[in-house]
Length: 261
Image (cartoon, rainbow, N blue to C red; front, side, top):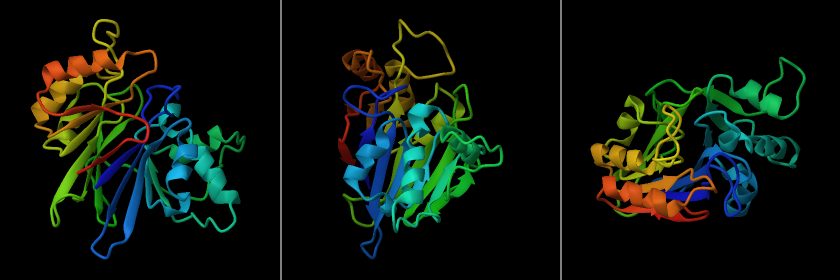
């Protein structure tokens, strides 16, 4: 399984990266490549097009409906509608229950009955897994001011033939029961750390580096990638705080970086 960082800046696109979006790929036993996108935040769709044809996507999962995680789904919808031969009406797009209406509003529709384009929409059910080729994607509800989900993605290892591995993605969250469940034993934990400990004291919104490290240690995650880092934060401070709480390998998410498990 391969994770590619399409965008990792928190709360808005930054000068060096789009907002949150992550491409996960693996091959099945026949050699067919499967591709899923986790979130499609501001600025992400342009980068995604340079990585693979959008028609090659097999699934899109939205953690929540803040613009830095879903705004560029509008670009995908325009592409699907107007690109000759795109034929993407069967593409599964999963998110909170009101995702189609929310996307329609982002596309400036004034029709209250409008949907968000010709996708195959679905909504998450807590801890009910969805099979996409060799992947199983299981959503966990997490702690954020709006309905928000993290994902546990299981699929074939790209390193050890025949082994199945787990990539866990926190979405936007503070510490909570759902985060504990999705992170447990993860081979790679992609975890947000948007807040700084001494400055951002609000709870129920985001993790700090220290809290992200504590979650990873308690979950016995094998390695972590810190993401959703706002451009005004010093990533070295976040990394230091996480390292003090978690003894395993830690990486700072970087635009277009890839991780293989």
